[in-house]
Image: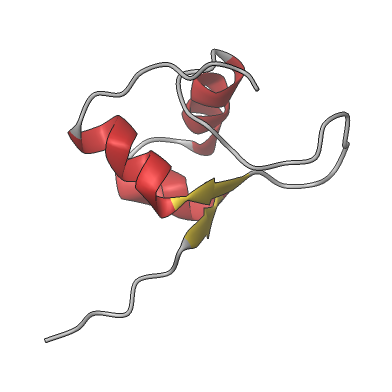
Length: 68
């Protein structure tokens, strides 16, 4: 049976997936522990997370990313 999983999640969905607060998820992003998709120097644009990055962080202990 195929389950339709979204490819991208917003900040609150990522927090719910981890069982953490949105502030904790933002802290992970600020410390480069979790990758988010967001235009640089953009204020008011929400963080978006690719589901594979969230799973890599949670299940495979990928804890840091190099900035491109």
